[in-house]
Image (cartoon, rainbow, N blue to C red; front, side, top):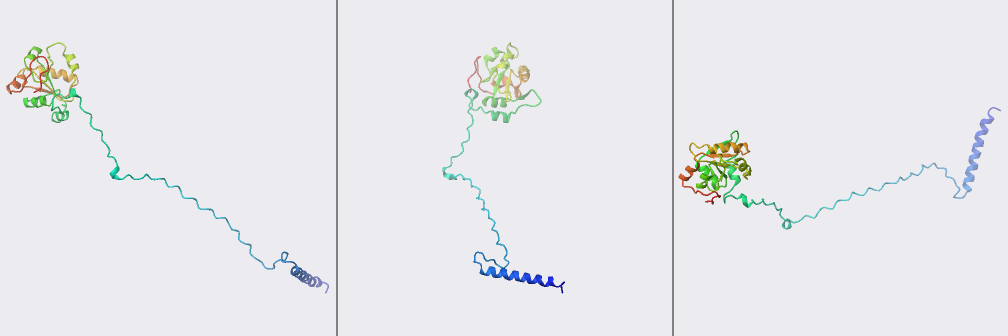
Length: 221
């Protein structure tokens, strides 16, 4: 029986301790009383982040009614210089359209009708004859650049013509080669739209077209 005594006394002591604890808890105040129920711990509330403010909306420009919008002004083309208006019908675009710069040759021969058209539209006209013959009569507006007189290179350098626009050259017609010689010199000087009027001054007179006289520039017809 001595071996069973500890086994019997241990539960008795445990029961007595629990009974004493229950009595002590029962007579204790509300603030000191322990709860015998097992309760789950209260959940901890996590802070909820506040939503980010929306990005600012840029101010849009106030639309302008079409009735109050000012039309866009296009720059007007620059006026031609007065000295460039050789004749009332001077038209560089028309000259280039009908007589574009030549390719692969120094000059091209033209008829009297083409020479007259070019003269009326303000093309540069050069007379290859001598000054004395030029003074007796020449095409209106023509300049004298004789291939047989001194100072030809200086006269060519002094020309204010556009090398790309058609330039009319003429002499006495027939077997006269002065206009062809002048064309070769002008081509070497950079002119690329040379037109030799093969009929020359005699054919011009025969057609009854206006002529000018004297060493000064003749009046326009």
